Amino acid sequence: MSIAENIRYIREQINQIQGTDAVSLLAVSKTFGVQAVQEAIEAGQSAFGENYVQEGVQKIRYFEQAFPNVLLQWHFIGPLQSNKTREVAQYFDWVESIDREKIVRRLSEQRGAEKEALKLLIEVNIDQQNSKSGVKAEAVRDLADLIMTLPNLSLQGLMCIPDPNRTEKERLNSLKRMRALFDQLKSEGYPMNVLSMGMSSDMIDAIHCGSTQVRIGSAIFGERHYE
Ligand SMILES: *Cc1c(COP(=O)(O)O)cnc(C)c1O
Image (tube, helix red, strand yellow):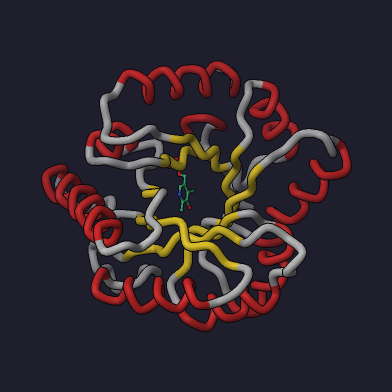
């Protein structure tokens, strides 16, 4: 199937599931070139996720120059090192992988005040995996409070990548715990508009459990080949 057909199919699937909220589709284009992204744009897709700073910035600059009138949103979703924050603050619209104070402070300083505020999601390490990025559920409030005091940033919600190696029951449980945390923070007054969870393999479960944004790569663009 073509990229356009894949997008159409995924949109149909999303629309058929009765989740709690409307669900947006983020097309994860890491490792794919501008031709693939352009096909997705022509199929009506406007929000893209990238994991690697250099690769993402190249694509953003390409589309700014080649299609200056096409409004796209670029989400940084990969692990972010502090020596790369400047480019992310300059070029991206969203960062979904926020998990520490130092990164938050740098993004605030490096985002130009003339630009729209950089939209942030706090990444939650919902399964407490040792090797994984993300903060523990108990630490989300401290990071959220900091973001809300700093200029040029706008807190929007939460993101997670549940451990794929657990049983189905455990994975569903993690997705539900994320939604419960999201609702709890919202009820405490935190600006929680986006709950980003669900990838190609668990999109349907994630929507059933209350995701508001799914991040889909391989089901749109095909298998990835890393260099
Ligand atoms: C690569 C990636 C995705 C997309 O994964 P697929 O399984 O290809 O849909 C989503 N989120 C994050 C954080 C990723 O790194």
